[in-house]
Figure 1 (cartoon, helix red, strand yellow):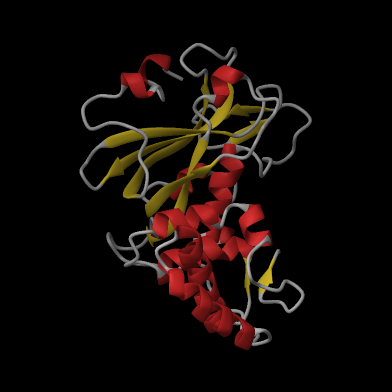
Figure 2 (cartoon, rainbow, N blue to C red):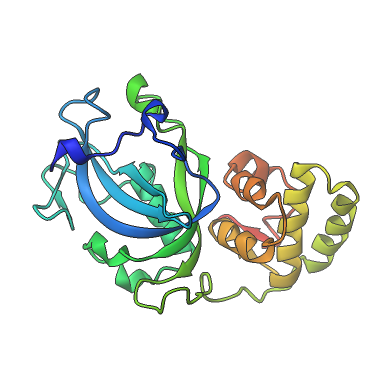
Length: 263
């Protein structure tokens, strides 16, 4: 690793046009595993997924996703793989790297292509957004400063092996169950009366999906909303809301009827 070339995540060091990107289309130029020391504040550094991205404006951005502890993982010599050196045998889904990789799969990246070589996602074109990071009580204060949000894949625009700009659909398959559909339609009409409120807009978007799909799982909601709310200026906010378990648990839908499935 050449530390002198590692990009800083400190907003005070960004150049003109730089910043924490959100709600933009990007191309993944280079993806490797690396050790990130948070600009010298965390020693010996955190094993991380490092992604060099390029926006539509040709702005280069480097994003790091922590994947666990240095006592458990080290990058391979070429950075293409994550090598276990401790007790861990898989990436935890609560790490930023785990959250990112899950969003990648939920957006429709073929599971059979995700083996142990991260460079398989080089060349991916995607729309990315920021979501609130999960609460991690044990996270060091200096490290946490830059992990309040996680940049995830909301929608895949083109897979690496497709022609440039070629669209790809989100996760294949639709749930065809119709149980609870009538109730969802009724509630959808009620919430549409107050569509100016983001909460109501999010509920209306979800109920509209439920009306069409019958049932859908929580993890499928973000990518589905990206497809169905393309022209909605509040799309980004709506997607972020569906990552809030409390919002989903208190919504006007019935888990027992299979309208919104937790898994």
